[in-house]
Image (cartoon, rainbow, N blue to C red; front, side, top):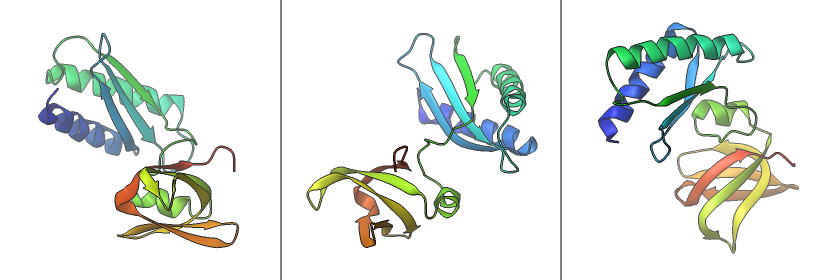
Length: 153
């Protein structure tokens, strides 16, 4: 799977979601599965993402991808909402979840540990700032692999 196919899928999905008043928050194309699985997470910024939202995006996206033959061969299309355990990636996520308990996992140990838990304070160009029981923790962004909401704060 080349990057131009992923770019086309992203462009089409973003356009369809925007026209429906929704936002694409994640795209994963699992080509190692038979048939391949294209999973797209959407969010309704006006409230909860409904089953109807997912169905509308699915119908429109499937039609458009097939019409333009973006993906050759058969594939499975999954449209869903990311749920509360999703990874934080966008500036909007970091603003929306300020003060929430998060887990930060680093690529390599930072100050002798790879997993950090605390309340999200902010993210700037260089670092992610957490509050851990009143103690400020600053983790360089270039070391971070994943930031997600903490299911067990």
